[in-house]
Image 1 (cartoon, rainbow, N blue to C red):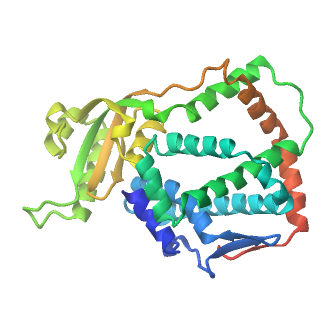
Image 2 (image 1 turned 45 degrees about the horizontal axis):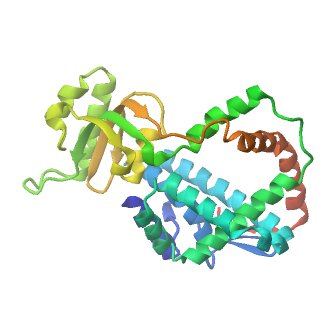
Image 3 (image 1 turned 45 degrees about the vertical axis):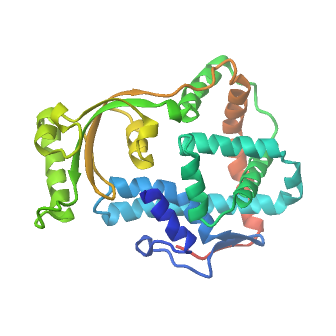
Amino acid sequence: MRFIATLSLVAAGAMSVSSGATKVNGIAATANGELVTMNEVMIKLAPMQSVLMAESPRRGPAYEQTLGKLRNQILDELIDRAIIFSEYKDRIKAIPDHVVDEEIEKTIRNVYTGNRKEFRDYLKATNLTYEQYREQQRKEILVSVIKGQQFGDPAPPTKTELRSEYSDWAIANRDRTKDVGTYRKIYISKGDPYDISVTPENQLALAEDLVEKLKAGSDFSATAKEYSKDSKSEEGGLWENVPRTDLNREFGFLVFETKGSEVMGPFEDQRGFTIFEVINRKLGPAEPFIEAMNKMKTQVNNKKKNEKFKAWMKKLRDRVPVKKFIK
């Protein structure tokens, strides 16, 4: 899988040369005596980069610009985390093990759609033991707790605020292992073992041409029957009620974490290029509103505190030494 291949570069201590970053002794930044490593940056970047790579078969300036913005955003978040941790690390033992384990289970469920093997592959690719990963999560939780404790409680949230917050929260925190989708798909393979004239470059050009024609009004079903090279081509590329757990991580993201039903693609994987349009998304269930009420109160309060947090964080940054080694 491209995601694990991307992370393998991380394990080797590499960063994309095309992203404009420069490796300096494996350190991305220092903040108040705490290190932010290149590995930490790339571990957080890799899941987003793998999807971005699938969306951008030709890469190019737009891809590089988006990748650079993502990397810098992650670096800034890690610097903030390091600063907060440096001020409050004596409290880390107060984070209970069960809280850390619940957060890890949430990650396995939401990021890896419950696939524990893929999660273990992730740890292996990043040279992390489970215990090392566990302690990283403990640090993340500590920082979240400190952020939540720094400011006085705002006015109690209204029922309308809670409902509004829940509508977004329920989508983000649903059980993704229960996502089911129906879509039409055209799959263009990168090569043909019986025809050496078929190359990845001309197949990508074909896929791009088909996308233009489909967006201009060509019939998707007829186009799939003529060009698609998967098992549903004779059915017009129609895939009905497909569980997200049957899809690879990148394609699952593209189907279920997007909106609308416009023609999308071409998206690249190791073997070819995919064009698709979603007909229906049945998203997995989330915790009911009444049971998530306390979480929603916390969410709304944290958003209200955010401006104060930004001002507090700026003061912390201004009074502690911070140095970045990548740009």
